Image (cartoon, rainbow, N blue to C red):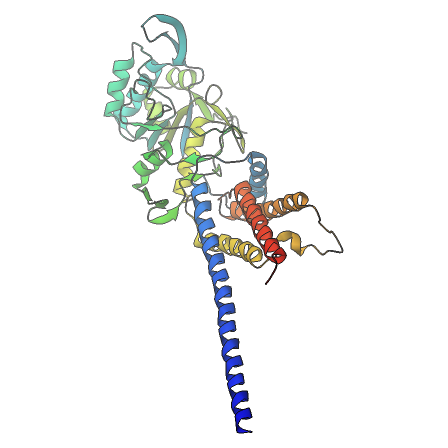
Length: 423
């Protein structure tokens, strides 16, 4: 009898020990799965941040952005005010012909450029008083085009403060330099085979500040810097490339009351105003000079806009801290990624949610297509929320495609385990 109780006691101890060990193994597996979900969601958040900093989009989302921009306007959501006092000066109709030559200095013909003698006359008047707030000149004064006014214009610009010009040449492909010297900044945007229109504005291009960033830095002494793979705007986490909200749009020559909104450089200013009137017009204002009606026109989410207004709106984006990323948005995106990852890891993909009585899937290809559409829809909802309230546009196609791939791989692995014979 004593031996029997001893056996039972040992058997109970063994079973309890086995149960504890089995439970620990189960908990270890469960813990590893949860850690995997956290790691994957974090990694995907980092990848998403890197994609936000790209100066282009992987898909043609312009039509969706136009609709979202309209919704923003109607609901008045995330709409910063462009309350800066500005003077708009158009140079579309102030041109001069210059001769161009090939690489062997053989004449090729003529080309029309912005009349540099008129630019000099304007800058000479404004430079004497310097009562303007800033001059943003979206004109490339490339030295490969030579005119009689170049020396005067170059010397006048050199003595002026609070002025900046554009250059469209990339650092790796300079085209002779600019008459504005160091007072130039890069402007341009990346095109892809899917997206040919203006999509994102880049504040730091190949390590160098672009036009809007230099203007913002000159006026506010603010700073955007890159630390590792991330960017900081005045010490706060930010993105380098943003989709502009365009708080300032003005392409009309006259307002409702018949007053001039855009001045033509030659006819409206130089030929019609005295020097003191020109100074008074620009006093304490940001002067925007560019081609408003021809040459420098780009298709954006709000329609066709001149390049100078795109750069000015990029400056307003920095002024309104648009590149900053709220921590609450990062948390929201992480939670969504974590939930989708957990559903995959714990064998509950999107197609598993559909009741069998409603729809039964027997073909793997159809299942993959439906899964992709499901993740695309989820990412689109997340993108709409982030864009409407924060102004950050998520890359839908890449993330949705990755989750579809991940779910497909997990299903194949799980089905392989179920079919594997046990010994």
